[in-house]
Image (tube, rainbow, N blue to C red):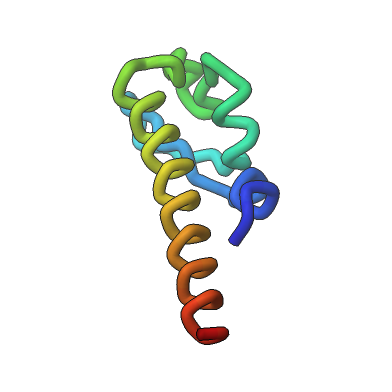
Length: 78
């Protein structure tokens, strides 16, 4: 999976109030700071420290996987 594919990945956003979920792309989550629950209309803060840390962790993990795949490909050529 590359960065573009990751951006298109759909992730359900759970409402902390009513438990309702709405699917949004990873790119949308990165680009938006707030989300309103369509069921109960509570404001969901996507700019919270934990959320941003999770987004950064996902991006970091993808880079690590890509690096490991490249190392694997290079090792086969040896």
